[in-house]
Length: 257
Image (cartoon, rainbow, N blue to C red; front, side, top):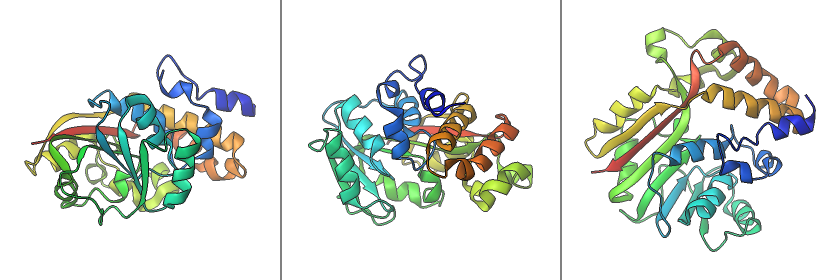
């Protein structure tokens, strides 16, 4: 597979028409996890995002998802991330022509500097697994949503709970170790959120062929990133071994009561 073929495999208008209008090389250059625009485009089908809404992009990384939200839905975005300086993200937003629609904020997910009930929606793509599994996190986060506000997240998921399996599958453990403990099923997330009685879950599902999407992304990164083959080869092997038996992405949406 050549570099061009690897990158072009990420252009899939039949499945992801919105994402396919974005340069995949640009997206790989902002890499912090498997194709975030595919995840966000799929997740957004379970949300009702409208122009003028104020949306928190939680764990926004280097800025790709915030650019997508502003361009595709006309929402006003607050892009919040702990690992990426606000100035770096803001430069990406400006280059993409959405600086007037996106505000970059450097903050940690447990100390969000926002007013209560100040967002119409909160989205989180490939970050919730790092901070959102604690029993008290959903109640904390819901406090920033207006009544009727929407919450949506896409996170690495498992088709069966590690607790039920009795151990992390060997091919997964070899690559990510204990991290997979936080990769839950959609059903786990549904209960975790709804038991609070603060939100009503509107959708909880595994992304169709999510492991396959992840594999395409890892192969492309292996081909085109400096040092990418060494960094991504274990992930490629993990996903090829898994074949969708356990791994994928959980997509969950809810409305605040």
